[in-house]
Every structure is written in C-alpha cells, then in structure tokens.
Amino acid sequence: MQLNKSTLDYIETLYIQESALLFHYSKAIFNNESIAEESVQETFIIACINYEKLKASPNPKGWIMNTHKNVCRNMQRIRANYLKRILTVDSFMLEAVNKDTAPDEYTDDLSIFVSSDDYQLLKKVILEGYSFKEMAEELDISIHACRKRYQRAKKNSRKIIKSLLNNIEIEVTI
Amino acid sequence: MNNNKQSNLRYTYFTSCSTPELEKLLRDDLQSNDDNALSIEEIRMITEILSKRNSENDSDLDFDPKTGWESFRNDYLPLAEQRDPLYQEPDSTAKKKGLYASFRYAAAILIICYVYFSVYSVTTVAEGIFSQFASWTNDNFWFGDAHINEADVGDANYEIDISEYFENISIPDNLLPTWLPPEYMLFGEEGYSNATENSYQYLFRSEDDFSTLKLKISYYYEDIEEDKTYNKPISTHEKDGILYSFSENNNTNAVTWKNGSFVCLIEGTITQETLMEIVESIPEQ
Image (tube, rainbow over all chains, first blue to last red; front, side):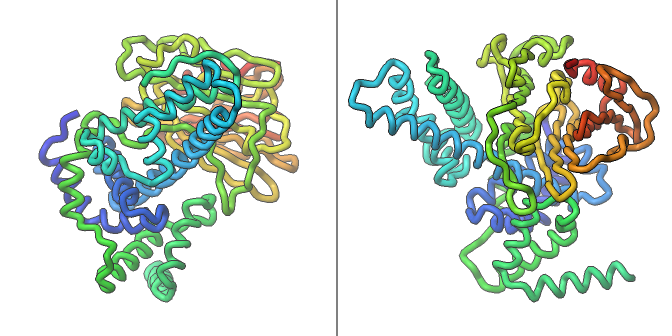
C-alpha cells in the first residue's frame, strides 16, 4: 500500500496539529516518554491504514483521539499479558536452577530460550518499558526487524509455558 | 449556546485541576465503561491543558511534532504501507480495574478462539478455520492449532477467556459460536460490571477493509426480557431451544440470543448469511 502525496500531506497536517495532544494523553497513561511517543506513531500508522475512513469522518481530530485511546488501551493490555508470561517463564527457570538434580531435557530448552537475545528483547520491551524504536537503535536493526524478534520471543514463550505445564517436549526457534 | 456554556464550564473545571489530577482522570477514563467515560471533547480539553502547561513550565518533557513526523516517515511509515501496526496483537487475558470488577483466573471453562490470518500462506478460507479445529472436552472449549504451520501464521492469533469475567458463573456449553469469519482479528475488548449485569465485549476488525465485528456477552443477575440489546428483529431462527433474533441497522447486521441468564450479541458489517453461519456453529447441548 503506497501512500500518495496528497494522503501523506493530509496525514502530516493532522500529525502536526494533534500529535502533541496524543503524546500528553499517553504520557499520562504510561508515564514513559518513549512508550508515549511510540503510541502516537502507532496511532498514525493506523490512521494511514484507515485513511479513507479517517478522511470520511465528520470529525477527523475526534477520530484520531478515539483511535489513540484504543491504541493505549491495547498497549496496556498487551504489556500486562506478557508481563504475566515473562514472570511465568522466569519462575520456571528459577525453579530449574534451584533444583539439585541436573535439568531435564525440557528445562534445557527453557535455559536456551531464557538466555536468548529474543527473550531478553521481550523482557526489555515489557519489563523495562523500552519502545521498539529504542530497542531497534540499541540493536542497530530496523523497527520492523526488532518487532519480528519480539514476536518470535512471544510465540516461543507461549510454547515454553505450554510444554512446561504439560511436561511435553517442545521445539523452540531461536 | 447551552453546549458552549457547558463546554466552558468543563474547561474551567479542568483548568482548576492539578496536573496529577488531570492525568488521573485520563487513566481512570481508560479503565471505565462507556457511561462514565470522558467524551473525546473532554479528553482534548485535558490534553490541551497539559500540553499548554508543559510549554509554559519549560519542562524537560518535550515532544516536537516536526521531529516526531520525521521519525514517523523514516521509521514507522513502512509499517503503515505494509498494513502492519506495531501492536496489532490481540492476545487477551487482560483484566480491567477501576469500574470493572476484578476477576480471578478460573480454570473451569476456557474458551480459546484462534483466528489465523496467514500473511504468507495461500491457504483459502472457504471453510471456516474455526470449524476445522474446534474440539470440546468436558471442561474446556478448545480451539486447537494442530493443523497450522506456525511459520505461516501472521500476527492474528488471539485468545479469549470469558471465564475470567464471569467468575463463579456456569457458562453453558451451547453459548458461543465455534466459528467466526477468519478474516476478522481481535483488536480490542472492554467490559463492565454493575449490580444487575456483567458485560464483556470483544471487538474484531477485518484485515482487508477494516470492517468490524463485535461479540458481546452479558450475564444478568435478574430476569430480563429477551430482546434487551438490539433493534426489532427482521427474522428469527430457533436452534436447540434457543431463539436467535436477526436484525439490521443501517449498514450493520446483528443477531442476539438469550441462553439462561446470558444474552449474547454479534453485530458487525457482515451479511445476514454470515451471521447465520456463525449461529449454526454454536454447538447443541
């Protein structure tokens, strides 16, 4: 989907007019400037994707603010969900480390996963409040690549937890 | 004139609030149900006040729209052009605080719906994906992913777990559909609880044209009339002793049904035929 100049100009005008308000909204929600800024960017990603609906709206500024509110709610929910998952994975790891016996083949996979760069990236985004942009800059990769690694980590974390709860062998892609 | 006066009064009130108070209003609003939410106009008032105060105080907190736009063009616009938002990741087990009731995780009944939207696969969706995977156990409603190669799966996997929001309430086996149009992805949810009802709704959006679909589940603590949630029906369908009422409103169609103390609604920019398919996927007791 290539955005033409007139669409970009329209989005840019709205961005210049509204982004500061959106930023202050999400700063109040997240108390984190990086996440607040990224939430603004996410809102305008969605605005670009839904350009026709935005343009057709009788109140584009209201549309943007409403979308931004949903973006913030979604981000809050996702972070809460993955916080639980990370805590579960880490608690399993702690239990495995504290065992006197050598880890079995399932906790070997857990160890590999927990020490992986992907999982560390997931933790930084969820626990330490890094934005994707900050992580991308730290790793010297694109935001898109950073997000793909994050998604891989979240999928593997689900597999790990499922396997540990069901005591079945899993295959983790690192 | 009356509206302007009310707006002015509200603005005056908000300017009298401290910054932490205003920020708390925004946070509480995000957690609230519709009845108590701030209007968009009020949210804009509050954010304008916060932005103005930030400028006047010469705070370190700084967001420059022009710099932000450059960053958007360089770093985020490619995602928009790929129709791939950062946080489009409807994975839902979140609980609401504040005005929503607080629910503990109940393991008794779990409904997990997977909507797989493959970004890379050429698999057709002629037959609902849900129907391929649904299998029922005694205690769980489980939509399995055994037939999906995860390498082909995009970001659209999601789960819904309604047991969290209906604590200590027995959920009928024949309450909810096992199939929703697979092109719809969960993108939001919200709910509320009060003395008379628990309600929770899941909001879906199609990837192609961003048509929307809503699945709303309400539990009423007292007896209610059948048609509590939507317009006059244009047709009805009875299945397994449950009456399904189909209705329409402008460009949206809906179906509602009552099962014991539950009232469910599915509403969206989908056809009546698709709604019937959804209804037909509800299992029978």
